[in-house]
Length: 409
Image 1 (cartoon, rainbow, N blue to C red):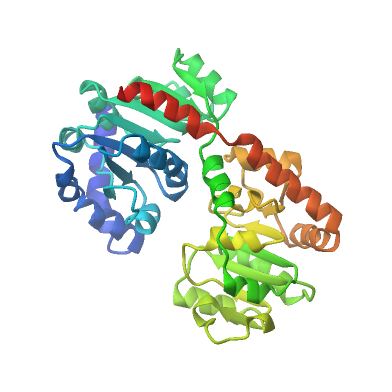
Image 2 (cartoon, rainbow, N blue to C red):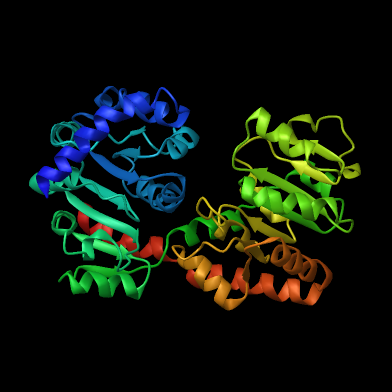
């Protein structure tokens, strides 16, 4: 298995530069990793706490812990590594970290060099993204290592007959903080007893957002006391349903924050809408209350826009992978998503509780939005379920920080 994994990493290292010629995302992946070890140099000889996240969603899970750790041990340096360009490009300037960089490919030589240079006092992996060579090297160097907001499923490689390498990699963790009892039981089946059910730290993140809610004057002006639907992180599959509904709707306003905000994609989306449309970048000097649709062609403000929604649609659940539904839910509004959400515990929970509604086609999309718009009592009761769910599930960060205190003493 080790030989197979070594060959796999070697193949990836060979093929990625070729793929980078045809893909901007892969090019960022390759070029960014060329700078990793240069960026790590300032950390040599210092006390480092290392957080590794796969992408943006996992970063949001790490963020409340990072902020607490920074306050707990301000003399320590914080390193955050990303696997995905979509996460790194958004958070590469994160002010609470001393260094933000890509995780190098998991070759034996890279793992040895990375751990030697960083020499972390504590390594914190978030949710998943387990890399055997790095984990083995951390174990070899007696580095304390924990997993936070972890979630395990029985179809993962750890629980297959051919998953010995990955099962052995899990032995590098001193402790697992998992989201649910199913994950704890699965780890127990592998003879791991060092497991705590802590929940998901994203609840702490979004609950904190609620307490620090920011006002957005331009959204106030656009909304103008009318019922407003906010569609966040939408992909083309989501937008196809939205466009049809918006073009035949007369009784509310819409704010769309697409996942892709290239000039062409925004222009194409605008052209397909028959309503009065204004772009965020064109808002200055306009009477925003006179428009029906506001297109957000920037990043970083969606979370605060959700505060103005009466109903939210969160994209990605029709094809590519569901985006964060906790951000709108924390504001106590009902959420609509696509039908592919089985890997997201919060979506499963909220659909079951009826604070979130899943659709798979235009007919179902139209039906649920008509009901949410027209039936105020239904809309408010569904939103309350969503908001109550957030409040009932925050607190994971406190449990994790209590354990980290014992590890750093």
